[in-house]
View 1 (cartoon, rainbow, N blue to C red):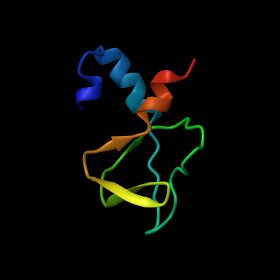
View 2 (cartoon, helix red, strand yellow):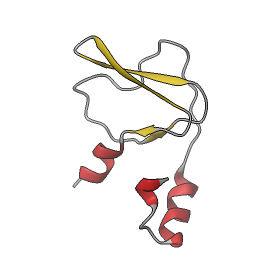
View 3 (tube, rainbow, N blue to C red):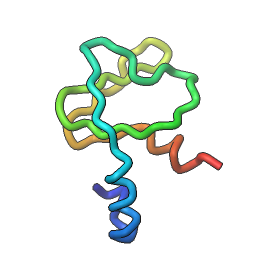
Length: 75
């Protein structure tokens, strides 16, 4: 994934060891607008719809990820 291209193999290995699979049912909210994020998600199967102020703006699918901004901006 491009987000990890400049990281060392050791750091990527450390990240991989912390991954936990999660399953969400259709129409389940993963993150609500305005919530403070503390997780990053990688989509393996299925599709995630993105809504802003109740309006559908995009969808993500296999190979996409989200939540990285919260992880990288955490102090």
